[in-house]
Length: 301
Length: 229
Image (cartoon, rainbow over all chains, first blue to last red):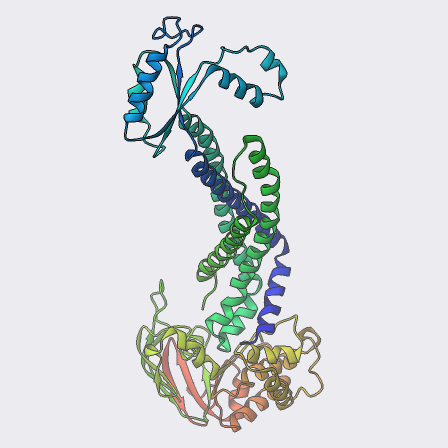
């Protein structure tokens, strides 16, 4: 095997097909960047999911005078109603802890939470936020029995399952992730077709050389390798550009999302590097594989 | 060396066979002219030896091996032992004489040291001393054909196939080409040359196999081109 000869042939092939090669590189770069972004989003969502789902509670808001719920009849929940509810919840096997938050404590927490927006605080007085029970579950997915136990008890105004709120958010992020992967798939399809065309042109441009190679008894691998490596090199170049784009998408998209949505976990650079290496590998294999398959059609052995 | 055993070749979508029931045996070191009008099956004959085509019927043996039984991945090894020369030279226009000849060795993985030693020897053998650095378009037709012969012979094949090697060359230059082929034949290489060129066949007095409509109509040692008529 004479490597310098093979590389010389590859260089000639790439140079003769320069415009096709450039368009192939761009397509692969975009495909792999979208693919990698989808994977990064998925990792971010997965790790945030497990972080948050372990911390969510079911909140049971008790009746207050301002409540419009018929169950409350414009009255505060009594001490007795509250104690009975706490006892019955604590008896449930799924519940690990029940905490009571008084109106004063809730107002205090409200004040610290919205300390940046004094207008909000000024418009709210103590007592506007009802007192509540925070039920922590042993397994966050087993919330139905808590809800059905509390639902019709006297003195209960509203039950908020925090998990449901989070699920809405994660659904949006899931959608974003699938959109990226779907676009990546379309780009991959375009890339495969482009590889096919590039190889066809390349085979046509080098038909004299390959014809002579066949006649003098060059092995099939010798004849095919330059074409396959041509594809692989274009894939590698595309993958490297995709790596730069992925670093950009981590810094601009994921980190911004993370800041504004207060994800508790941040993607580590190790995870990003893993995704980048995976995308580059997929890009290279995709192009090499596609050239190998088209070669069988356009290069007579 | 080459043995055609009742070979028939019909190309797909063609009614008329290109070769019919051919029986030809060529011994090691022979020089054979393959003559006959266009379309008589000369090129098919040569392509069967290279296993570029498979016979529809019968067997082709090269160096004792039945080509029907040769697996596809072994075909390159067969072709390394057979050199080929064509009417249209088939040189690479962007490579000079040395590089064109060296290409045949590079693509079968020969080391550089070997190439540097062997290529100049063959270029001298075909009579192109001092023209190693010329590009094909700087050479005459005869010289280009010499480069093609050098490329076919550089790996010292046991068989040299020539398909109308003098077809594009004037008669005076053709004699020179024939001398080169004769010199190669004297090294022990079997030469099979398909040609229309009556003058050359008559001048050389070698074995002549004549094809007509795919049949062998004459096989004569020390023959001439048109003796049958």
